[in-house]
Length: 269
Length: 295
Image 1 (cartoon, rainbow over the protein chains, first blue to last red):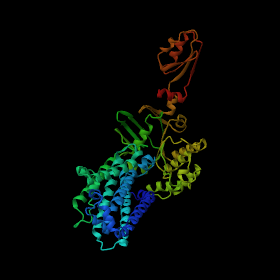
Image 2: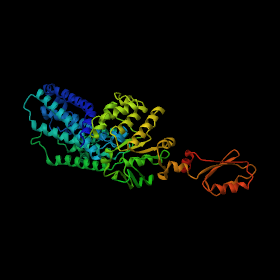
Image 3: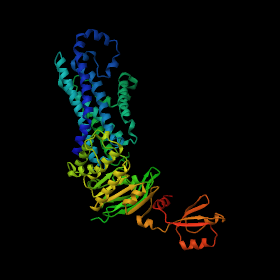
Image 4: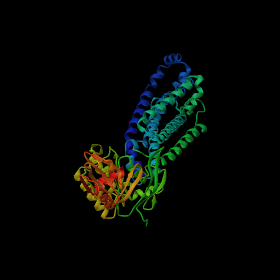
């Protein structure tokens, strides 16, 4: 890996990373700040909740309405949207552009004429992408943890929180690997960002559909969201090896294919 | 020590069924300025992109200083400079930041003062942001980045596009100077006068194939003559079948003109028995010789 490339890319993406960190942290903080009000109006909320079909909340990992009134349950429900969806959008947009922007920005002719191998470029950019996704997760997890510590009204177990955070990171990283893989296949890169965002939203829609519609429940297996266990309030909630293997294995496979393709890819301006 | 700085052998690139280049072969000797000329789309940039490992060939081999352009690409790039025809430096950097970024890949921090010399030659403001530069000034950045690490071999793809005449002249002086110091140069252009000014040898590429490869001087001395005949009363068709005519016979008013590659005595003998109004025999310009090969 070339450190010159790595540091330059980190600097280049720093502003975007900070912005995403700020937005997601703000969303988590604002949402968690409503927890106390939520608890204070427990009976009213429960009354309203009973009007909502149970399936509509199941996709967020809520199998029991009462789970929502624990601080972890409240956090988990909102975490699905903020970190899983927004974090995945960040990861896929970053990864799908990180190699491709050299082509559509017409800078590839310079970069590839300097003493760098394709491996140097690929692994340098992969390291930048990995570190950025990790930092985004780290900061938002810390923000989530601090928010929980501030608003909690009873005991809070850290284990489900960390497990859910790890699943979130694995999901974000998988979407990043998908983005990188797609970018190595694409010749006309202009629509890559729209396509990447669309892909995450479609996958989330498929997952949602599979949760609320029984007839579409098998369809959910097409979506990476399905492989995250969001039911953090269930007893015995922990890391399941098959889920971890799914995310790590599929990500590794996509990265290996991406590298093999990029190593032999014709670069045009 | 490899015998040639560049050795291209039967190089081909296919884009699906379309031919980019086909069976391209030539060599460059150390210290040479080699011209590579052809119209747009003839295959010049395709050849160069293979040399820089930006694209992969469909067949054939290319070696720079005895090293394979695919397997040894990183080593080759340490000793090579490249002026791309259509590339952008990172717009969010200043010129200095961009050149520093480039130099660090060569294991050097600031180009050992060479950058400042080059910037002075080209009147380039190193503090300016690249996004604020005009097209011509971006070309200057491209030239400086290609030379600041003192390469042994320089590949140039239409390097003078966008440069004003004064800067072009400084660029040519610099190229000559670098060549005197031992640099080998590969100069791709569609502008004949540039090639004529700098190069000793030239390859003409047409439709992806090398149409001709020889010394500029030999090209000039080609037996090709430009013949103009004013036939007067004689039927024009008589002249269309003269042996030795190269290409088409063109007619402008009452004058016929064509390129002739046969023995000039045979032509004069043939014409002496016909009552023509006038005849001129001229040396064709280099431009006309090139156009002859293009067509």
